[in-house]
Image (cartoon, rainbow, N blue to C red; front, side, top):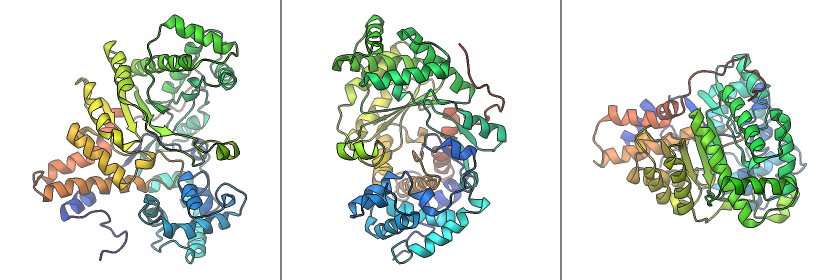
Length: 480
């Protein structure tokens, strides 16, 4: 029996072990999509204890704790930090075969050198040991990133964000690129006219542009888009149930915008039509700047209305959705491609039933202008685990070119999540290693090793054009 989480964890063959240890392991990390708070990087935050860095805001762990019968007060309530950690430690043994079991112990090993199994009996000792280390300068937020060989981090930011923290990080000469990502979800959220108009007021303040008409609105968004570009942004991102691709005329969108600005609620089709147009307007901005647009598709969010009202969104009440994705996605991408305004694009799929749909969709719009121009992104959220990753990579391999895949990202709010890149790399190397040992790929370690390194690092570096740090004297606002 193999030892749990040994150096050859997840590597089933000698070839897989060589691919991982000699080719993949040492590659720097490009985390091109995450939700790390940039203010904590700017301030080089020091966490007081393991609960603060591990359990605050982590709805993956909260869901497991709730399922294990732990009261909400230990998840999002006012229990002491150690009491909350102890409940998590008592839950961990029951997470066997859930990716949380692997992630938890990988993080303890890679950051803190702790090889003990976390459970109720070991909780106090592990908590004290890790918390003591976290209070030293070696475990500040910036040093946690350095410890994992992170080269680039792309945070997720609203168009109205000041990006002051990104500017401070750049001025400090941190040495790791920390770049913003343009996430305009609230600029499309017209279901609630009051909330939307409140957001428009914030956009007015951020851009310095009074917004009365649709043209004003788009000009203000472009102002922020330009500002993000000055600050080094190279990606946008959208979190959507599905792509919207209704037919529309610009005059129709102007009328809808005027209606919602007057405070009147929109009808269902008006909402869909407005969202459809906004996706195109924003996608064309991305194309003009050579950015990459990302679409996270398929989450059925906020299913528990009682807990949503009590705790708010992003607290662990979401699931995989079963939305119809194909036709609207094809219509949207074709609309942009027809006008030769399709930017580099990554499609992230949350429903594994749609893997083959996504893997074949990308081939419709890869036009030879850029290697892997349209990507089937890594398994995300409920699918960023062994089975989900293997299914995504197998679908991409059989219906596209996995050799051009831009690889893994954390999609996380936690500074202890970077072993997920190791987890992905081990799974990747095991897939290739098994194929080589089975005679399904040639015994060419140099070539296959290069492909593995490209998926882990090189493809993303080239695809996104990362390399140069943000200029430290970037202005606080762009006027257009």
